[in-house]
Length: 349
Image (cartoon, rainbow, N blue to C red; front, side, top):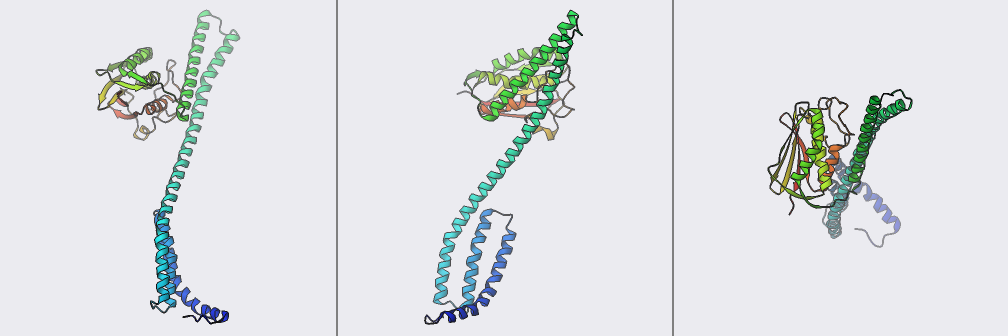
């Protein structure tokens, strides 16, 4: 015990006397705590914070107990009670703080990953679109210069050049429309005018419009719309979803192949399935078919003819965005001689 009447020098001497003892007892506890922290460094942040809070308290109790000669004196009891009070307060705070920091760290990491993925997608999109814009522009420029220089003068050839310029212009216009639609989807500015939409009528109109493309490709298009589901949605956007899926299936189906469109109902959802004869999608690409500017491997992508209106690889990405805007789901899987794209939309009412 320390005598209250002792001078400052005596107190200092006493402190210097017990300091080596206290350090000798505390050092092993701190070392064990450091080792434990190293072991749990890859664990949860809450556990790390708990160990970090307990180690100093245990070290202090060990030092006080050793200095007191390992006797449970009144002083030690007081210190122990204070330490228990500190633990009771700091341990819940450490747990809550650790969990909060962990959640924030996970959120920041996921945000960084999403930002990197978005940036990579933007770079890929710019590369694809730059290539696809240059090709028709170069053709239009060459044909326009040939017409201006009277390299082509025969009426039939002039008409042919004019027809090809018109086709390339329409292709460029479609690509610009796709980019504008995709920008609205990704920016969250897509405004839908919702009403009850009969999907059978939408499918019928789209198939009628896609008949010329199927005829040029010599692809049969079969429709099975035994059900007539009605969904709550925007007619133009749903028509675009169906058009993108059907045109994609026709483009990737070889001549004399078949594209089948089925419409049905499962539970509280309308189901639209589009089957093609593309030969299937590699397993490594199934999860990427809806990515921006993704076109698949050369095995699945037939060689392009002059009649093919191949866009910038945005059709399926736009379809996915529009389906999700209607609170629906879209997926792709290998099926039969090709693959199946399936859309599920909530029924109206």
